[in-house]
Length: 607
Image 1 (spheres, helix red, strand yellow):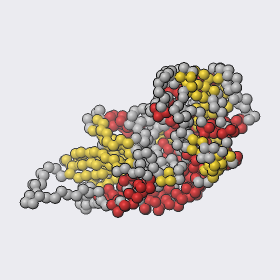
Image 2: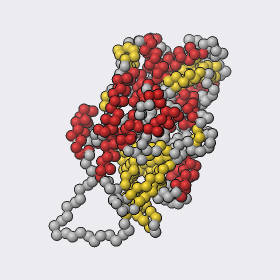
Image 3: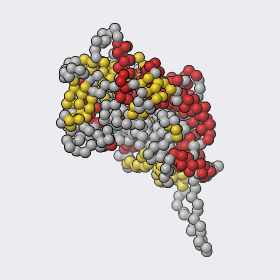
């Protein structure tokens, strides 16, 4: 089914609303006249279990884009939100009436939308006592367990504890360890006893182990340092799976907030960020892994355990509530023990159903308040400013971020030992769609430009360290020979996300994309003079906390801060706009970098 517009999609789904609550049971084929039923199979009796999985919902409840102030839509017509997930879950529960169905989530729940940010920053639940919108939504859905993702730690441990206390189900994170006691800081696992069928049917004990991402130690260092340490996910699984089995778990499912690729965005100083394939290979006794973090859609993947030869089922349900993983297990009993006869996974798309009215009702007031907040006008822009070309061209809208960061750090360092040093700033093109329209600029426009809850910090770098940093950042671009066609769609390496490409303000430089990675910064000079930047020159560099603490593994940036007032960058941008009332590129746009080939600027079509 295809849709020509968001409106037509709503019409189609409205027509389908009645069907949305119908059980998903295929009709039995008609029996031919005169035929007889085959004799019943004499094989062992089997029972079935269904496990539904979500992950990386990131504060999405309504199918709503707060940055566009419209129903969510993308080029593939995906939908988002817990309300959509709830409809699918309710359908499957209805289909399986009288049989066992579990619902799990693999983390990154309370961060990612203005809705989530509002109840963490503008009206924090730790101050108001109000129930978090993601608790309101998920409690309606009646999850059986949720794993803590790395973004659960973004707003500090008190807010996380408050949210966990509002949930009607357990929150798991076996490898988040209290540094003082050496004991798990959160519940490591639960064992759910379910009845496989109606009254008198046998019971099955399902062990659910939660694993969070070790990268929290870097990404939220300010919130967890000295309080929590994050153990290796593979080692933690190896520790707890035998415990769960010994305590009666017949089936073991790992709910892990980590990808499956075996790679990390940071260096070897921390345990692996994406180890789920390794967990399946190395830890015996696991039947399936629901995983998240990478925002990929992995319908069904089987990994052979190296010690037992058993096949471990893995599945990842994309992001934001766009997909729902369904794992189906067929089991039998042999000598009083449960045995998995078969298992497989399928993926359901939430754009096939309407939103669940109970979930919408539970969050309606909070959603409405957030919509009103993000539509507050903060300034007027003299011209339209777009981020569409910010990845490969110096643009005013990215300079806006760097200008505000530079101003804040410069003012804060006045009168200190670093006051005489030039202040540089780093920003990344987080969004390809952000726009400040000509005329009224609203909070949602600024939030759409800076979509992360990062805070501003500053460190001192030498000229040599700045060059090394820029060289590392320049690996973002594919190698493009002189004379080769230029296509913005393929100018960057797909293995490097946009948020791991940084641009500097305060120095002039060229990136030669015809040269090999590591040899691309062919011009790095002081503005105005054109003098080359000396290796021993010293600069203060404004940078976000994610990058400064090691996110992206950029060289030289993980060092003591000379500024760290715990100010959220997005709010600094909003405050700057509100104070001045006008956003005019003439006040802050200073073109200082460009892509070249053999010294000749790269020309982009239709630029």
